[in-house]
Amino acid sequence: MLYLVATLWDYQDPVQLALHRFVEVELLDEESHPPEGFDLDEYISSGAFGLLRSAEQIPLKLKINKRRGIHLLETPLSADQQVVAEDEKYLTLQATVPDTAQLEWWLMSFGADAEVLEPVAVLYNKTHVSFNVPSSLGFSARYE
Image 1: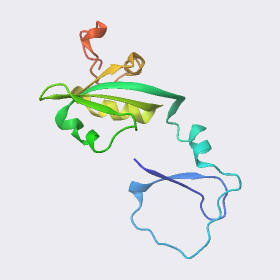
Image 2 (image 1 turned 90 degrees about the horizontal axis):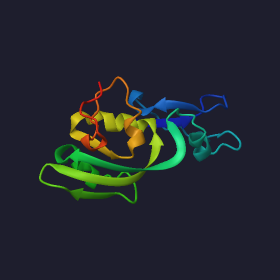
Image 3 (image 1 turned 180 degrees about the vertical axis):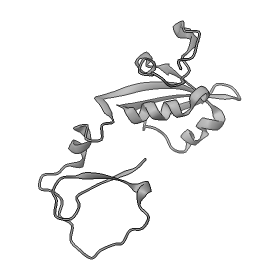
Image 4 (image 1 turned 45 degrees about the horizontal axis):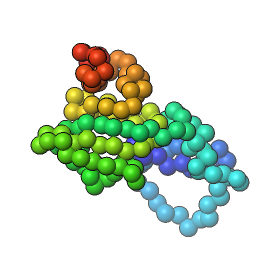
């Protein structure tokens, strides 16, 4: 999901507006008045979205079904992303990505079509969702 960070009317507190909820927009011929000292990067880093888990970047290694992950060749997750075709069915992706809840949700959306190979910590955050765990870690079942 994409959000617009804005102020409404004469209020100075920033709010988050989900873009998919907009039905219509109109460009006004009015000057905008951002809150004094507002910095979008600081706003995001503060955890205002509730998505950032830490300031650290995660070295992600992911095995993904080629038909589900082919879009990652055109829309990389990061500047250092590398994708290798393992065989006709799977791709292995390596990228340094932010440690966010959105990353976790995105990974879970692939279900059985993706397997997180690294980092192991990402695997342990999964509760009450179906998610593949690599057999190399000694687990023989899927978490449900």
